[in-house]
Every structure is written in structure tokens, then in C-alpha cells.
Length: 178
Image 1 (cartoon, rainbow, N blue to C red):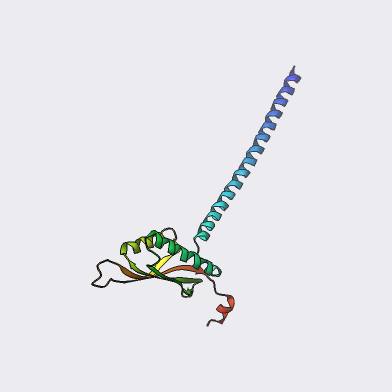
Image 2: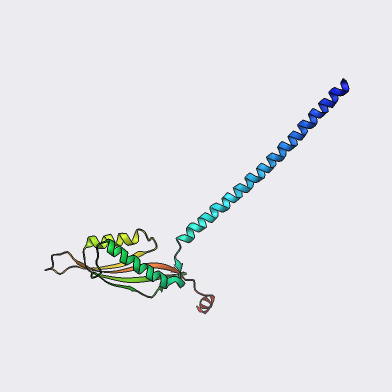
């Protein structure tokens, strides 16, 4: 009987030892999986921040003709939304981009001429254009008041609408600068 108890106790201790080793192995694997998940989460958050920065970044200068056409269309849509007719929208003229100081950006201006518009229409157009397009801005606005004998409150407005283009200078151009 003593030998039978010893065998049972030995078997029970062995079973507990095996169960403990198995549980430790599972815990270790779960710990490694949690560490990997934390690393993956940190990487995902880093990539999400990069995506957020890139999506709002100005477009590359090589796309400027496409952007000029898109911007012209956006100006036209905003003018229509403000009740400005094609007769009042005299001109939308893209101009040459200008480098912003010593930066890697160029500013692409688009000149817009409106005649016979109310101030309400002008503000409405500005809001309709800029609210959904944070990359655009109205750099300058020149208003010409109606003549004293004109009682219709119709103004002439000259706007310069701009957006940024990412255009780093080449290393050859940098090397040639003093």
C-alpha cells in the first residue's frame, strides 16, 4: 500500500509539474503575443500620423497643370453656388508659381475677376471655395465700389487665390547658389 501511495503521490506531483510547465508556456506565449501587439499598435499609430501629414501636404509641382484645372473648376462651382453668373465671372487666370523664400514650396496664384457682384455673393463664394478646400486661400482681394449714381450695390472684385506646391530645388541648383 505504501508503494501504491508513493506512486500516486509521484504521479500527482508529476501531473502538477506538467500542468505548471504547460501553463507557464501558455503565459509566456501570451506575453510575447501581447508585446508584439503593442509593437504593431505603435507602428500603426505612427503610420496613421504619417498618412495624416501626407494627405494635407501640398501637392508636388509636377501636378500643377492638373491642379490649375481642378482649382479653376472649384472656383467656377463656388461662384455658381454663390449665385454669380458666367457674365459676372469675367476671368479665371492661372499665373506662374512663385517660390516662397528659401523654402521647398512654390505658391501658385490664380487671378479671378468678378464684375457686378454683391458683397453677399462674394462672401458666399469665398466660403464655398475655402471651406471644403483647406489648401486654398485668398491671398489678395481688391474691391472697386459701385459708382455714386449706381444704387444696385454691385461691386467689382479682383481676387488672387493661391495654393502651395511642393517643389524642392535640385541639388545642382543648390550647389550653384552662393
